[in-house]
Length: 136
Image (cartoon, rainbow, N blue to C red; front, top):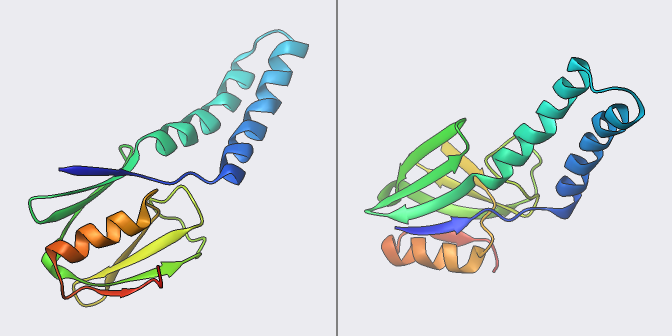
């Protein structure tokens, strides 16, 4: 199994940091309250998702993992093409520099591997029929 970590966009890290500022400010200015602790939950959850998003290739399968929310296994033989995209739709991708992997007849998944060229080359090595429309 080869694991490819997800690329993380700095703008998204900044967003998490800004989300943390409000509850931290409230805790410092006022006494720690249950409400301010609840405000910490979304940025902590988003941080958890960022840390646990990755893609694995092995045994003829591409595994897309994003925390406890997503654990999708795709047969590499079923992948038809890969395209570059900046589509901001919700996806197991922690960057806007993304790849859309098309498989089966009408299915796709948007991901953001850190080492895109190595990732694509690995998939094509296992399935030479994959069309690489990324321009990388």
